[in-house]
Length: 115
Length: 112
Image 1 (cartoon, rainbow over the protein chains, first blue to last red):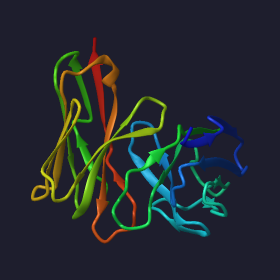
Image 2: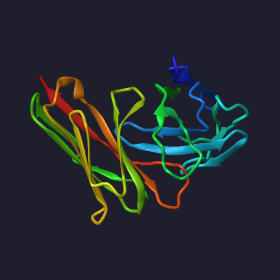
Image 3: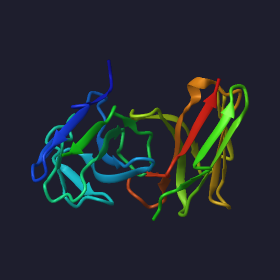
Image 4: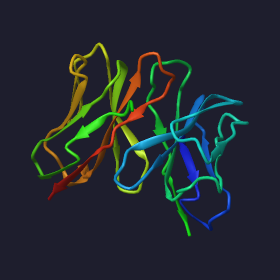
């Protein structure tokens, strides 16, 4: 099955702890993205990566970090510097390779709750 | 913000009726896309319309694009209870990277 997976589905964290959300795709896509969604809101871009070993900040990167060491993996770390981390986190991928705004394929999401 | 805005924020209709939702955006675009999100799930791509297209169909979906007004509409005909979801428009801006800017969504409820 080709697709994009995120784990875990639910994650609880104590204040002051860092936590890493996993995102894996076997679609052979070059580009990957992390979004944050708050209740009743749209998606806001945290980080994106157009190619392996390269990534760029999105609109709300403060308090987050990413890595892109492998094409199929784009983990997101929510650090203790993120003031309000409780949210639904969505990972996506696309063919990339240009400025055409390609269709994005989404994972099922991780709901992070800070206790 | 480059985000689009959907209108209405929420829409409730009877099964069998048509549902229309609108999207307005601010910048020049390469294309505009519509996505669907069931509660607590990821988004699913529905349809893409390019800036040089005015209308596109896919099954029960019809999308229009008016670049002079910077707006798009999504029409779902003969709605079903299973169409209940949130619908988002997303734009790809001219000169931008391969990123999409998502609107705030329309929450559609189809009553059986």
